[in-house]
Amino acid sequence: DEELFNNEIINIYPNPVSGMLYIETAATEKIAVNIYNVYGELVHVAQGKEIAFAPYNKGVYFVVIKTATETYYKRIVKI
Image 1 (spheres, rainbow, N blue to C red):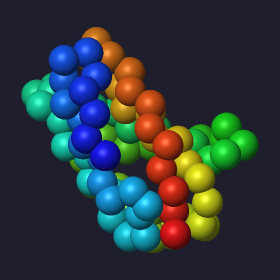
Image 2: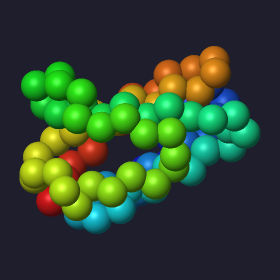
Image 3: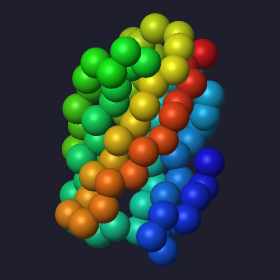
Image 4: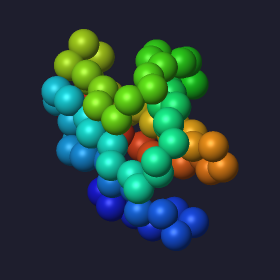
């Protein structure tokens, strides 16, 4: 799902996900990634652009990506 967010293209794939989730962004600074379940509980914190989704239960998750200046939200389905 490639989307334009404040003139920055962010690509999060695959969605739905069963194994690895990949985040592509033109941001050169570090990004912080927080993943929340449907209940709003924080289930994972990462600094990289690859996240192992295999350990998580099937369902809906919300990925929050923070750069130095922006915050981006994306709904992900784990199958």
